[in-house]
Length: 356
Image 1 (cartoon, rainbow, N blue to C red):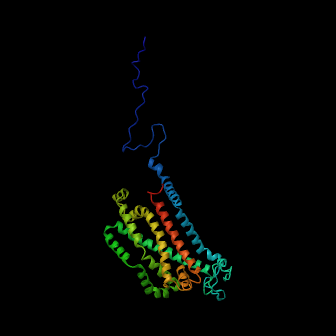
Image 2: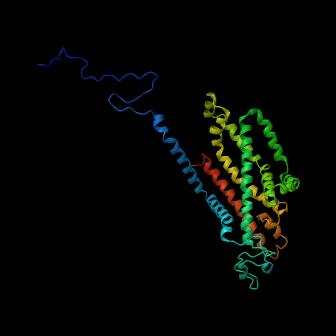
Image 3: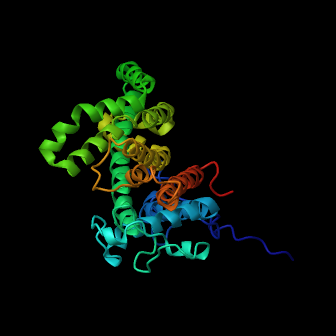
């Protein structure tokens, strides 16, 4: 005899109740009944994600940079030459301006390998010039001045180019005026313009700030205000492209002011071309300063730079070729190292190349 179901039993017994409806607004505030409440996804990820993403980004950039062999070698040489010109005078304490007529025209110590009659001194490993000044000490002092001019002029050109490029790219009304001015500056012959500036303002700045400081200010300013145009055009093109991105349009739709839009959303995204322009600008500034000093329009004769050492050594280049070789190698290798660093930074900061 089969069992009949109890007619008095509850028909809903043993059936789980349906889940409670979502609260108003459609947002969940926790798990099912009885479980601990969960944090929203954005709040749970917001505390750690920004720091972790920035760390992983720069880690990826460094890994990509290390894969560029030329960039690593260039960075190593740039660090070496920087320590050579900064820390070197503290180790090699010979005064670069001291005249030693008795020991003038001393050859480098390696000259003895092929010329047994060469006048060499172990206390002057790279020899002396026609006035008895130590060449190694002059290379250190000259490198300090040349590197200082290169860095300061590069920063000045970078600031000017970035400001002009951002303003021209973001404000449509100023784009035509600023770009036509940039084209005008690009059309000017830079070397004659530098020579005119040196001849016009050299005496006034010398009398106002002194012979060394006045020439330093003049050279840095002349190189900086004639080297910003390429950076401005690159930054302006990137700003024009970034203005049409979705996140920029969204920030503009909620009323973000222009200053905050530029500093928070646009400038961080043009960091890659700015850094590459900075490295190339450093190389250009070093070459330009060396060219001005080689032409005799740079620092005074008793204030050495790499270009000034070349200028003073040209007349006796056939008899003492090492006096031209050493400053020439310093200029060439420094510029080559900076260019390789720029290539490595360009590849490492490009998201389309990073991670390959």
